[in-house]
Image (cartoon, rainbow, N blue to C red; front, side, top):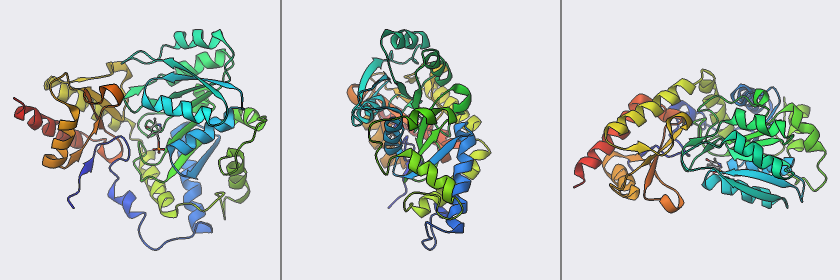
Length: 362
Ligand SMILES: *Cc1c(COP(=O)(O)O)cnc(C)c1O
């Protein structure tokens, strides 16, 4: 089968050295060799999240990490305000509701970041126990101003949970400085690794709140149990349960690359793509100062249906991009410039493919 190169916002194209770290004989999930990789990956994630606090690597995915973070921060019967910027914001709502809490959605204007003053006003209208939002809304490529939003929440005394599943690793995060209590991610997007683990970062200040929770915490998903296991047995059995060992080794290698940070590379790739497509008369959905570093949504401008372009690029150029979401599914296509594809050359191949698609349109 021909290899189709992934420009989808998760899973992403994975570098050969990261893929190679998964192969070889199956190792143990206990003992010094695995523990070294798990601990090194954990410690390397701390500067990526911008925290000196706890980071958990949990078998599963971003959704699991979100549920774990929200469940840790919210008691049954409490209320979260969720900034609704699209599809993944609505998934956060489900994570709030499955723990017996209430979610109130605040719509974010199309194509723009949330206005911190509007969020301040919303937070003053009633008592909220948590503010949740997506760092990058993967369905549109919107990046939220996390620091400014966390500031208004902190002024209102409301803790903040940020879903950074598609943002972490594509631009800088500083949760300790920003005043974010918990941030989540996964291995298979901006960090450029293979799927299989969810990630949760907890700022030191958040533990009082987490430990004060009254309603049931869950078992496997109780972040306190994961933290205590890590602290008690990091040299021998740092995870609470059996880990996908190969996935942890791949993540460990991907983070090694990450530390020579790739942020500049992601922003360059995004700007190259946006400029190249602008020359072809195609515009990004999001205004320039709020575009995500790892994924861009482009409007088709009613010139074609996005699914035609997606199909064409797979068939003719072995490139896989993504369509739009929900009601504007056919009016938008999305190109991820994450991980291995956060490079000018990769963007050139996408622009060339789109150019040849457009030249066939009558
Ligand atoms: C992909 C994604 C998720 C879901 O992550 P999974 O690893 O598929 O569970 C959640 N939030 C955002 C913003 C995402 O991009």
